[in-house]
Amino acid sequence: MKIVEARVIVTCPGRNLITLKIVTDSGVYGIGDATLNGREMAVVAYLEEHVLPALIGRDAQRIEDIWQYLYRGAYWRRGPVTMTAIAAVDVALWDIKAKAANMPLYQLLGGKSRERVMVYGHATGKDIEGCLAEVARHVELGYKAVRVQCGIPGIATTYGVAKRSGERYEPADSDLPAEHVWDTAKYLNYVPKLFAAVRERFGDDLHILHDVHHRLTPIEAGRLGKAVEPFNLFWLEDCTPAENQEAFRLIRQHTTTPLAVGEVFNSIHDCRELIQEQLIDYIRATLVHAGGITHVRRIADFAALYQVRTGFHGATDLSPVTMGAALHFDTWVPNFGIQEHMPHDPLTDEVFPHAYRFEDGHFTPGETPGHGVDIDEELAAKYPYKRASLPVNRLEDGTLWHW
Ligand SMILES: O=C(O)C(=O)C[C@H](O)[C@H](O)CO
Ligand SMILES: [Mg+2]
Image: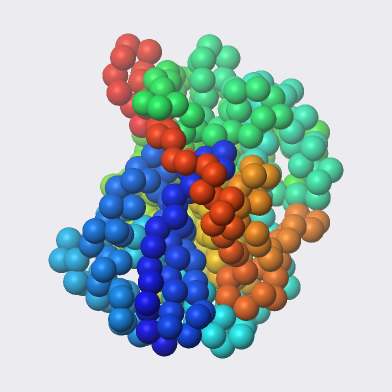
């Protein structure tokens, strides 16, 4: 089954999304997501200039060999641009293999380990009351797990909080990076009150999650984890930047709050100590940014040895193609924890028809052969790329901080 065509489709149906389409001489084609939020065109250039010409004529069935060819063959290994480009190829090839086998992808991976995939939704509010109203809406919709984020008094903008209540949160919201302001002391004083209010209003059964988005130092993260133990969080995410994996030893010494890390990781080497030393509980590295199914399967298998479970990134900058492929992976992977879910804009869903379905706080990937997600190219062409940047963060004195 030879690859005869490989091309990149750039579209912006509400937000920028990059898709790779690989066509074989048998007529079977596959698609992969290549979206790297705020750096989209770097991956487009990498694919078009360096990867796609080398794919033409190769056997689409040789997924592992193509993965190794693109990884080792680049010489410049790893990094988000390289690993996102490899992921797009890999997911498209798994899509082709499963379609050719006439199987939904989860069957090819090893079959179902569960009937359905629990997801968490995002409740965001300008203040605690606003967030509680959003939690109530999610509970009404059937969610069993909700990530809670709210505005912090005295800080003009806070990560994860939509501009207007009830609106979708999209951080890449301006041509050039918007400048946000951060104050750790105000955040640490306030955020435990949010968890207390959620527990009081919704009881003990609802799973609650929170994303610190890399803003604390290790000792501050330890202090927060310890302070919020009574509220029994499902996880505390990205409590400190994780380039320094050792930092998590300090946090672990201070708290039993479960920790999730890894949405910015692109390789098993980014999380090797975190997993091996059992410094985290959930690994968030996912298909699109970490080399596709071929590589993330290695991360998940390695994590399973240490009872670390998956909790894949699933923000709206990960296209429906990643969502579909991730749901097949989640259905198979033995050490599944939870899957993030942020609904896409209805227009995005129209451009990417898909087989996955939400019901009662869970998703099922569908039975369509492949990963079950397609692209309507005619519709996609109506929405051209529009540059959009993620914000930057500064402390009140102007020091550049982690966003
Ligand atoms: O969904 C999350 O947990 C995020 O942290 C979302 C990120 O800010 C987003 O994917 C950045 O592109
Ligand atoms: Mg996050």
